[in-house]
Length: 312
Ligand code: CUA
Image 1 (cartoon, rainbow, N blue to C red):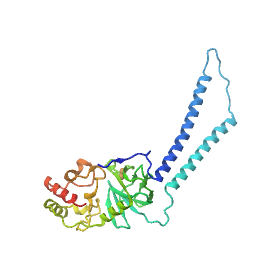
Image 2: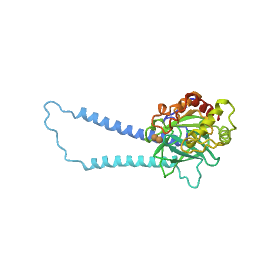
Image 3: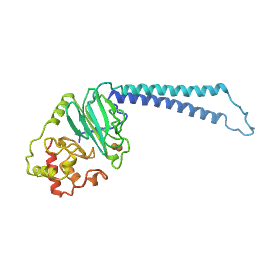
Image 4: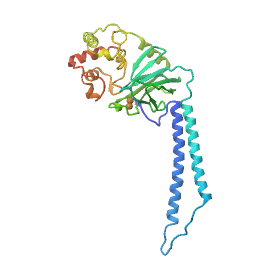
């Protein structure tokens, strides 16, 4: 499997670098406050501790100058934090204006749909983006509130039904980055993984072109049986495969499933045996998911898997 990275401390875009800088700034201020307060408390505890034979200490009814100072200083610190946060938010998510999104991300229980409107491409669970370009994502949801979070690449952003939000990503490094849904959205929230594949611009263009290609009829005998099952059983009510009558939009588009690295939203490696297992007993892999058990035999599951794996 291709190595993958997930870390809030590993910034690979201007967006995450700005967020990391804000974190460092906040952490430095918090550390300074902690050291000042803890240091003064320690000095007071030692220096003004009760000594034998000492009576009641002098009572002080208040000190307006001191109270002004310890009100004004925290207020100024909070103003500085607010200004730094507002500056970072604007740097990370500048106004979208009239720009059309490069990718429309639609969150579903419990998978991600990615549409590339200009190319007319629809895919699922693995987001491909070109390195070195400024990408605009529009986040939508088909059901409940989800949250798109890939810590290395972009800010964390909610996907809210009926209220699209926008997310800028300017990926600088080629690689595979993972993330997850970060807003509790039901049974399989913990298995709603995100996989982002950042490629050089030429490789990305090639991938996008490959996603538009249609497949011919399956060649191998088991794949032919698999296609028949796919179209005759209820698979096609939920899934689409371009170039066939299957046009369901409830589940992920499977037109190029064979070319993906993982299955079930970054839960399983994409192998024929994992796919057959997933078709045979989805609830065993992702309890509560909406993929039904179609009561196919083990051989039928292998045939459907053979068909889908032959769709690169
Ligand atoms: Cu989708 Cu949590």
